[in-house]
Image (cartoon, rainbow, N blue to C red; front, top):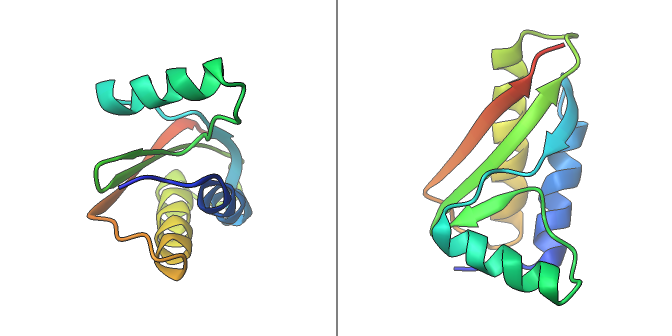
Length: 102
C-alpha cells in the first residue's frame, strides 16, 4: 500500500484543521518508509509529514492548548481516518502522537 501525494496532502490539511492542532511534524518512519522517503528527497519530490507503514498511518502533531491534548489527538485521528477512507485508503490503524503541548 502506498500513499500518493494528493492523499497525503488532504490528510495533512484535515489534521491541521482539527480542533486543538497547531502543527504537524514529520512522523518517524520505519525502515521501509525511510527508504521511500530517501528516494523522494533525492528526486526532489515533496516529502509528506504523515507516514504510511503498511496499513498504519503515523501522524505527529503539536497542540495549541485550546483543548486537552488527548482531545486534539482524537480529533486528528478522526480527521486522518475520515479523509483516508474518503480517498479509498484502507488503514489498520492511525497512530497520532503529540510532539508538543500548548
